[in-house]
Each structure stands twice: as C-alpha cells, then as structure tokens.
Length: 312
Image 1 (cartoon, rainbow, N blue to C red):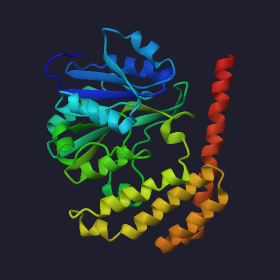
Image 2 (tube, rainbow, N blue to C red):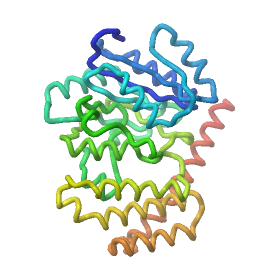
Image 3 (cartoon, rainbow, N blue to C red):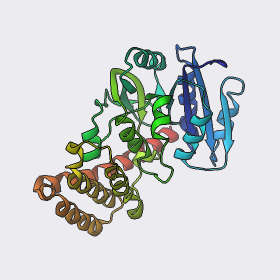
C-alpha cells in the first residue's frame, strides 16, 4: 500500500460480513500494484468484524463508524480518498492479484472510458466456483429499460466523473450502484475488460440475495422517474420510458413472489402489462414464475450447504 500520491483509491464498506471480510482484504493486499490506497469502513457492524479488522492493524487503513448505510459510507470515503481512479469492493467479494493494475492501465490507455470493470466468476459461500465469466458489456439502454446491469466487482471510475455527476444517492437501498452507473454513462463510455479478474460471491446474507419489501421495491420506479426527468437524455431513450416502467414493475412482482406474496405479485404483473402491453405475453408470465421460485430454492440450498459446512 502507498501513503503518497495513489493512482487508485479502493473502499470496502463492511457491515456484518465478518465471515468473508478476511478473504476480501487478503485479495487486496495481494494486488501486484503499488499505487493503491485501500480503506475499510466498518459501518457499525454487530458481528465480529472489528476482530477481523484488528488482525490487519498496520497493514491497512480502517475505521469504524455508527451505521450510515452503504451509499453514505462510500460517498464519505470517496470524498476523503486521494486517488485519480476510484472504486469499491464489497466485503464478501474477491479480486485476483492482477486486477487493479490491469484496470488502472486500461483507464490510462482509454481516455474515452469513464469507467472500466472486469469479468467475474461467481462463487458460493465456501469460495467454490459456481459459474465462470458472468459479466456482460455495459449498455445504458439495457440497464435502463431491461433493469439489468452486469457490472461486477472491481469496477474503477475516474474521479472527474464522480465530481461531475455526484455520488450515490443516499435515499436508495436496492440499486444505488446501478443508478450511479446510469448517470456515469451519460458522461462517457463504460467498458468491460473481458478478463476474469474478480470473484462475485453469492450467499444467503448478500444484499442482492434478499427480497425487498413491497415499499422498498418501489425504489425501481423512483429511480426511473428521476432519470427520465433529466433534460439531457437522448430521444431514443426517452421514447422507451413506458417499457422501462413496465419492466421495473415486473421486478416488483418478482420480489413479491420471493416474499411469498402471490396475490400482490399478480396485481403488479397486471400493472406492468398495462404500462407496456407486450409484458402480458404468456412467455413473460412463465419467466416471472420461474424467477419467482428459483431464488427461494437457491436460498434454501445456500442455508443447507452452510449447515453442512459447519457440521463437518
């Protein structure tokens, strides 16, 4: 780690992920890159996160604060960071040793890119590989309309882009990162470096693995309404507002299924197809049903594997 003129500042916001945090930190310490500033912020964890961090005294910079949420934690940390390139690494994800160097060099060589992210492998709670190379190139239309964003761990972006668009919106809980990438993409290109330089962990306690509440799910629509209210959107994007709102409502229906609220799910499905008629097709109904049952099954499998691992 460096104490002067870092090229890259990387932040890990940590909240009750102590079982995975050491592997995350070790992966950063193993980076073959010298111009790195790395800070871990314990956001009021109630597990043994402080004990894990204490083992790294003198090797990393870390601090503890009362819980403020991921978005505010990152905004505060980025404001204090010194690097030309900024990023974050979730406290359960992992970087391969060459990741930061390859990504920083890519930004150096591609001034048109405001952000670059690597391909990633999907791992489980026990760090076993579930699927290789799960990321896809970023596309603003896909992200906005289809509600899909494939930017995984390790993304780096220019400080100038953050200063131009502002940080994460601190009122968002489900997808503040996706909304941030949408704003960044209006400032320049987001590139994918198609090398599997990161490991994205799927486990029962991950934020992305939880079913949002009915009220929380309405965040999808708030994000879209805020974005479409901008005055600088291309006409090709603005013309797809109804489709985007319909697909966001379909995500709300999926979350309702994950919570076991079947009646609400089908009410939301009706809202989605009224917003955008093609969503009423039987193929969309079957897709929603399949998505609605797949995650509870994965959740049950994850809990079973954790039980077996602890009993062994």
